[in-house]
Image (cartoon, rainbow, N blue to C red):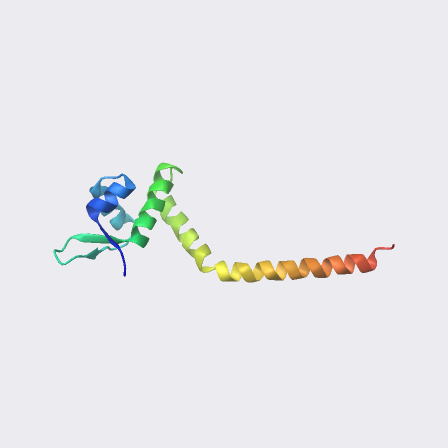
Length: 108
């Protein structure tokens, strides 16, 4: 079962004011769901994303555009993880092959 946070709960977790969450929704183009009363509720993934936004803005001093670009890059890298694992395996195989070749070519 998915856990949802109210705007107040999410704001407290992130130590920001609720209006900041609404601002980030607009600037980073994500839309929280609404509960039966019509109030915003955030998923854990959205709270995590907002935590990254806060870090990029406050700790890395990135602009909104810079934070958007960094989040996009991080998302792309996450999607490429399986490919990077395959690349790592190929590099290990290549290292082994080159080591064997070096050993064949190196006089005793």
